[in-house]
Image 1 (cartoon, helix red, strand yellow):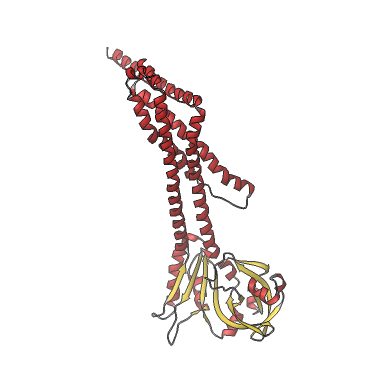
Image 2 (image 1 turned 90 degrees about the vertical axis):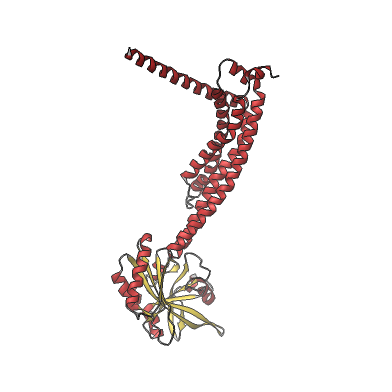
Length: 417
C-alpha cells in the first residue's frame, strides 16, 4: 500500500513537472508569436534599449581607456621611481652624497637602477652675444632608465664615458634647436661650459610631458656625474633617484631607503623620500569614479527605455483584451497570463540589450583591428552589466502591464469590443 502511495505521489509530481514545462514553452511561444506579429512596434520600442546598452559598453570602454591612459602617463614619468631629496637649510646643511646612493644600492633589495643628480645653472653662449643661464644636471648612465627618457638622436652616455670623465653631453630638443637650428644637426657638435668644450652625443626628451613640473627644464643639459662634480667641487648631490623591479615593492623600498639615508646623517636632518604609487592609485580611483558617474547617466537612458516598454505593453494589453478573455475562458491561470506578458516585455528589452551590446563592442573591436598599435581595453563586466540591466528593466517595467492583464475579468474581457 505504501509502495502504491509512493508511486502515485511520484506520478503526480511528474505530471506537475510536465504541465509546468508545457506552460513555459507555451508562454515563450506566445511571446515570440506576438513579437513576430508586431515587429515594427516592438523594434521601435527596443530602440531605446539598443541605445542605452550600447552607451553602457562605450562608457565603460571610455572609462577604462582613460584610466589606462592616466596610469601610463604617470608610469612614463617613472611609476617604480623613488626620489630622495634633502630638506636642507640653516648654517650647516647635511646634504645627500654619492656614498648614500652606494649604501642604498648595497642594503636595499629590489633596486635595479639608481642615479645621483647634481644641479647647476651655467651661462651658455648662443652666439651673437646671446648668453642664457641653462640648467645642467650631472647624472649617471642609469638616470635614462630611471626616468624613462627617450633618446631621439644619438645615444646616452655610458659607463665608459663616466669612468673616463668624458666631456660629453645629452641635451633637450629645445636646447639643440636654439643652438644649432635642429635636433639632428646637434649630434657631434660642440659647445663650451665655463670654457671647457663638450660634445653633444645625444638629444633626448621626457617620455611624458611634465610641463616643467620635473627636475628637467625646457632647456637642459645632462653630463656625466663625475664631470659635473668637477664643476661643483663638492660631494653633495641635490637628489638621489632609484627604480625598483616590481611596482608593488615600491612602498617597502621607499621606507628602507629612508632608513638607510637617515642612519648616515645627523638625527635632526630631514629627507623626503617619495614614490608615485599613491599617485597611480589616485588616478585610477578618479577614473573609476568618473566611469561610475557616466554609467549612472547611461542608466537613466535605460530607465527611460523601460518606461517606453511599459507604455507599449500597456497599449498591447488594451488591444488584446478579448484574447486575454478567451485564454482565461479555456483555463489559463492568473500566473500564466502574467508570465506571458512579462515574457514579451523581457523579450523586447533583452533583444534591444543584445543588439546594443553588439553595437557597443563593435567600435572598440574595430579600432583594435584597424589600428593594432592602439590597445583599447574592453571589460567583460560591461557586457554582463549591460545584459543584466536589460533583463532587469524588462522585469521591472513589464510587471505592471503583465499584472494588469492577469487581473482582468474573463467575462468582461469577452464582452469587450
